[in-house]
Image 1: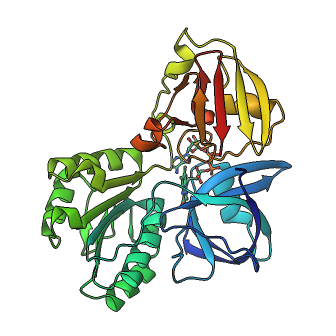
Image 2: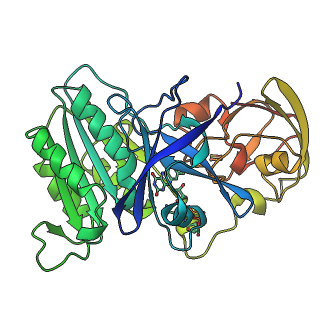
Amino acid sequence: MSTKYHKLKVKQVVRETPDTISIYFKQPFFSKIRYKPGQFLTLLVPINGQVERRSYSMSSCPHTEDELCVTVKRVANGKVSNYLNDHLKPGQELEVMEPMGNFHLDLHPVQRHVVLIGAGSGITPLMSIAKAVLRMESTSIVSLLYGNRSEDSIIFKEILDKLQKQFSGRFQVLHILSRPSHTWTGYRGRLSQSLATKLLNELPKLNVHKMDYYLCGPQGMMEEMQATLLAMQVPAEKIHKESFVTAQATATTKPETEAVSNSVVKTEEVTLRYDGSVYKIKVSPNKTILEAGLDSGLDLPYSCQSGLCTACRGKCLSGKVKMDEEDGLSPQEIKEGFVLPCVSHPLTSDVVIEIG
Ligand SMILES: Cc1cc2nc3c(=O)[nH]c(=O)nc-3n(C[C@H](O)[C@H](O)[C@H](O)COP(=O)(O)OP(=O)(O)OC[C@H]3O[C@@H](n4cnc5c(N)ncnc54)[C@H](O)[C@@H]3O)c2cc1C
Ligand code: FES
């Protein structure tokens, strides 16, 4: 199966906060893009003659909104997030890859409580999930714990206020600000284990099987929230997480990846099956399988190049590969033999990967 690309026209660019915009795309007239709440689009953004790929979760609700919307927050010195915030204009066209991602919500016919925990730009997929549950599951309830720095950095503040009024009794938002103004009357401080435990204990309780938890935000916050939930006896399979950045990227000193430092990795030939063709590529120890494929001129699908987004996903049909990072794949996918070529190195000479 090949990855489909679409050309989308920017309908509107809305400034949400001083450092965040929402980009509304017109749906293609003929083949509408389908996605699930929580999934992301990969944007191909031409900057200075080079095409950069970045993933952005959709903040729109696929069930009730006609347009597709992604929300982009500036990252300090970030190439694409700053370019989009500064230069993107309505009418411009951008190429995007088919929506993807394992962090998604399937609608449920029975009442449940969906608890969303996020910080900063992590609100984006949570917003799509919240709108889907509130509008499509008439008896389910949604709670959102949302951490930010100050009042003016809260993305979607007005929309969240409106939704709370519209779905009063079914939607509750708890804002936690680390550096609020002196007039702030909400929660103050970091979204720590102790504060989260207190807030979560005050939320309406349903049977454990009727509770679902979705976490998205900085790596450290998600690890702390996951530990909090596990300590509260929430089953691990009820906790869903999305990472926008690898732990390695946020670490002050980058550890050498295990695969590269591991002497068993040597140059091997790898067979890639993609889009009905078979390609053989040589992969040296200092390259990933994706990098070697791109260097050979193959038009392979990819986005984050750090094992998070699954855009490059393939199934290992034979041989053994070593992945530097597995967080993007579910335990079930790993069991079924799926691999992420952007962080994979061949360990044997008979590796065959079917991409897509
Ligand atoms: C599945 C997925 C969904 C995503 N959804 C969103 C979204 O909805 N909204 C959104 O704003 N971003 C989202 N991102 C992050 C986005 O893809 C880019 O990584 C981000 O915009 C930075 O790109 P850049 O080109 O500006 O920075 P780059 O030039 O690529 O990086 C600059 C520096 O910033 C670091 N960095 C990269 N991303 C982050 C980050 N998110 N936080 C802190 N440091 C970072 C890098 O390690 C690097 O050191 C998502 C990422 C993934 C994998
Ligand atoms: S390109 Fe994102 S996981 Fe490989």
